[in-house]
Length: 66
Image (cartoon, rainbow, N blue to C red; front, side, top):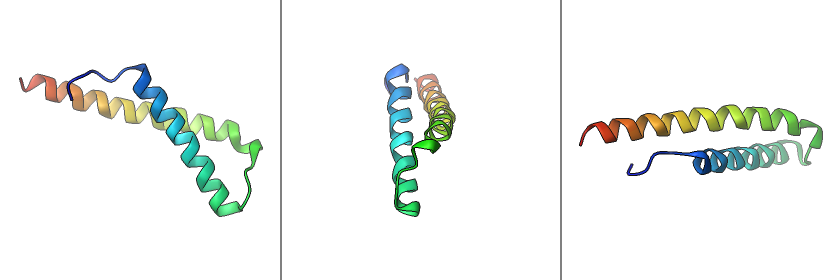
């Protein structure tokens, strides 16, 4: 990785995880439950943070090799 992961990366993961969660809910239930949106957002925030931390770890390891 050449650039350090920043806020745009985190927001990209957040939007991706929210969309993925809504698509999975639609596939299993056949409808979108808008009442589940707060839980979807909280789970997406957690997943985006974990993904961003792994990307930051990968960036710091690749940076230390040079």
